Image 1: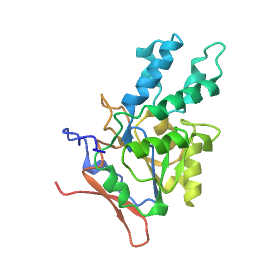
Image 2: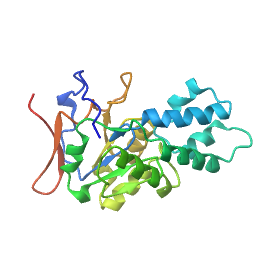
Image 3: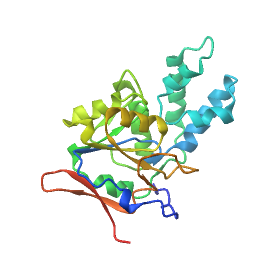
Length: 234
């Protein structure tokens, strides 16, 4: 599976890369490790059309949150949010056409120690594994998925749980995110944030450092096992 092409814009602002050591790296999946926007929006557009929801205004709201929360927040009368989310997941398991890696991500996660990173996604575990495989990425050593928490993003539960499973504090973690709900969750958990903008059509208004993809920096491991980001020479 080919990666999304590296951005031609000078998105990486080298001085703003987090200049500190971290105990672990926590990655959102969709839009951060891989792009499944095309297939996700196809499925959600069909669902919205069946329920009389305005597709154009609705699609921008689906990213970064659990399907059950997205459905529930619409407040549609007579709708069982859990049942609808299950139907949506079933369609998403079938439609994986066009899923691609974010540029540089395979080499980046391949250089990380196995016990020092996790994927923290709003997708159910089965769907996460399906999309990771479709992107041609290795199975992560730890996945925190939709069913692992009571409260999904923007609640901090998923990142707190991931940090706990890795035996570290969330405040010592760097979260790689792309969506407002996930960024808010990471902030609430007390983690540092690096925004991945590979799938963004427009610049994001954020106080956090932003990079286009993973092509311009690498992870390095200190003598004590702490993780850092090191820019590649221009």
